[in-house]
Image (cartoon, rainbow, N blue to C red; front, side):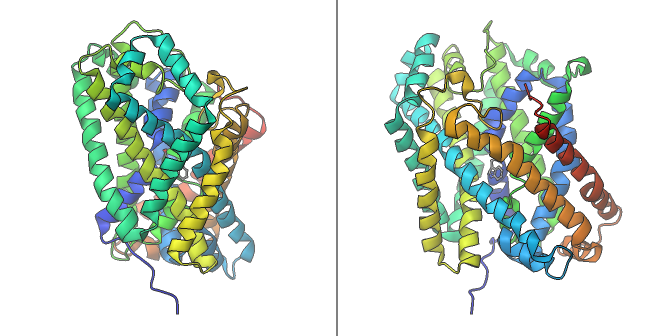
Length: 464
Ligand code: TRP
């Protein structure tokens, strides 16, 4: 007899763990970067619309599929698609999800490892010396990237922490970590926002973010906002589905999904406020490079009072955010091994974690050499930066959108209206008009928007 499925200890446990998954490098790194590239204002509005039209409905759908099936992504589609058109083929969507989790974690952990290096630099006082010379900072980062041993070491450290937490399971591992990490993360970010309020660039940052100028919006920008809404909410590969499978029946899915999306969006905006306030405080020519987090930002931190403390806090923030995300990625792969292969949790996390760690070494050592700094376009931009860039390109531009489209189509067109309604009202009460609205979004609007991303990728549209 199989063990009873683990559950979050309460409503908050799920919300913290799922927000932890959503809030990650995507919020603290990629969002400020693409907002900068797309000139703020109008892009931010489009992003908010993308979260509402694509993000929220798919988030609801994933959690629904998980809680209804009480399974990992593969099992969820097997159980829920039984007897439906296409039958067992839907399981492939689950497989794609588990594979995507494996791939994303392998390179995400490499970048997450950099944050540990930078925390050590900040705490040891070495960062202060480097940051006073922009050129030194730049070359430090370049050398760090092309040092395979350091890359492997910090990647292993981060994978070790991730495995160590997931090993202890849903309640004692994942939820406990999230209950500690998320409040700390929020407090650090609030402190940094308060700090940024006193910097001279605060006003410019607010204008940049909240004064839309639609003439600066491009089609590429719209597609990028759509694509990012996916990545930032951890959608399209069954992470939210897996976490949803541990959710209690008496809790409300729509309310939880809305809270998670709101938290994620709020954190992304706060990260922008902090970074732009600091950057706009100086007459600094910020190159549009995605590595600003590790090259330009430290330089700017130390132009301001309290640079050491601010930079140390900042990299701890990024590390914590990344950790709650890597945990969710490993949990998807582990839950698959536990449910489908019948492994014990300990064996599943250790084996899968080790496999991902080893596979990640390919990305870790691919960063030096041929790849120049500007090639490292983390999250879906470039397929030129070696294994790292290729995996990232595939996952962000192909696997996640295709997975998301299929999840939306399955939920909207195959699961059945009554089954969805029952699951969404369980623990929530009658949904009224909100249900038909969600049905419309998941059947028509979300697939159309995600379809547009996929078509643009097929046509080879460049995001830049
Ligand atoms: N959402 C995380 C971020 O913004 C990344 C992430 C974690 C993720 N789990 C995921 C992305 C699952 C896609 C799917 O950094």
